[in-house]
Image (cartoon, rainbow, N blue to C red):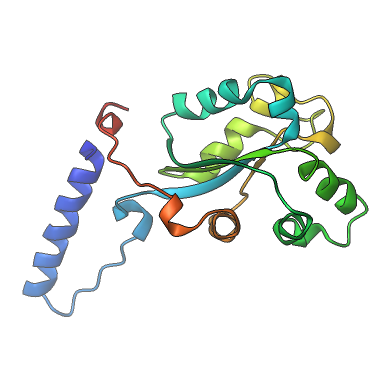
Length: 184
């Protein structure tokens, strides 16, 4: 357990004791602060990453940030799953190319976990348009063409939950105990 979570747990217990002594006192506690697991983010390494043999480099960047990998599998996405995943883009002109690209070869589906996970992953990944991606980001360093984007990352906690449920069964996500978290 990280030092922060240990302190947060202590504070939560302390607040609960105070509330028992002063019943009319109400506390608003943000659930993410006291969550034992933090937030989760769905990421997908697209066919270009596998074809270029840079899967390990991309995963290493996310791990070095201190995020915890709790779900990982290589899959061949069907057209139906791809359309469900990118449903919000259905009316856009690039939709069929996007579906065609992610169904053209296997992808690596992952679930990452950590405090402010979606925000951190999005910063590491960089802007969607490769011409706007900063050097040092995954897309900025490895992306060549926006229409063959190399990585997908959830853009909100709600999207992450929806996407994780599309690609992973609950038993495929393993929330293992991270002994190094207290040192980060």
